[in-house]
Amino acid sequence: MVVLVPAVPLLALSVAALAVFYTMPTRFNTWLSRLPGDDLLRTALIFAPATLLAIIVMAVLYANDAPRREAVEATRPSRRRQSIRARQRGGLARASLWVTLPVLMLVAAAHLVAFVAPQRVDVWLQALPATAVFTRLFDISPYIVIAAVGIGLLLGFVPAREAPEETGAGRGWTTARVARLGALLILVPSFALLLLTGAGLVWVSASAERLAWLAERLPAETLLRLGLMFSPAMLLGLVLLAGLYLVAPGRGEPAQIPAPAFDSIPRRSTASPGLGRRDQPQGASETSQQRFRSGLALGVLVVGLGFTALTGMATLLAVIFVLTAR
Image 1 (cartoon, rainbow, N blue to C red):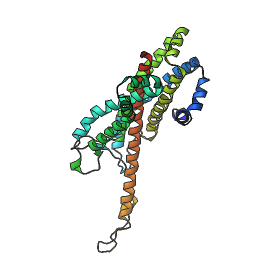
Image 2: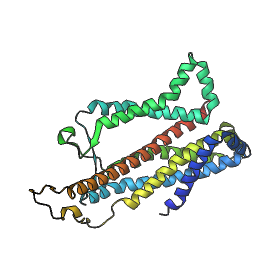
Image 3: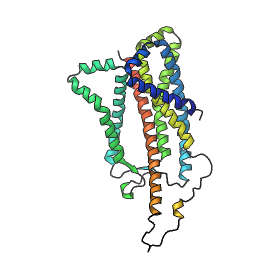
Image 4: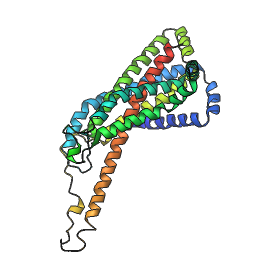
């Protein structure tokens, strides 16, 4: 709760700033021109390490605590629990993810660089032959790669409640396991960005000339564009990790969940023309709604943690590119 109190309003503020940037770019650039670059750079060098440190601490704690939480969750009988298993006939689809996921990261990094430093990317595209074709391919590349990743996930995995012949014998991916994997994935870009920003903060604190060199490499517009992509992704990861602690099963004995109410309702005789038409569909409908909510929660978790890890890696590559490229 202590983490959520500042993280949620900051996340809403960063998303609103990104929306204003896209809806009113002229007014946003006018406001941006009034900001001094040195002060903006100092603020970013203080804000980024603090946010990344909070993410790393939360991710490490949850990654270490997730196996115990998964064991506790497994002992709690629940109709809502839903896991994901590998599909027997989806080996090729799962193998394609080893190609499409790295390509997705590279495409995300390339588009983030185009958002942060559009002039440099335009110069590169103009230098290529058939510029119009490459520009069109560059614009539609995210949709193509996201569709490829989505098809690989859909054909390679299936909810565990499907028919046995459609699923493999491997261990199911429950919410706790997905959350632990997401926490571990978030650690990679967060730790690298923490090292990069922490080293930059120490480096510029020793000399004002170094701050001027960094401000020349990262002008106010470029730095703010980086912040507009960095803040929503990292704050979303922080909110998700904090929320997992609130919704995950805690310590203690397994909870005994009473049987659903529709199981205790007297059934009509099999000779009756109505044969439970009012009772059975109600229970089936309730179970269907529970499965839908469980699947929706798992989907939001996967998408949110995956988006945070992907954007973190893309931000890391974009920062390195902007600092090293001329």
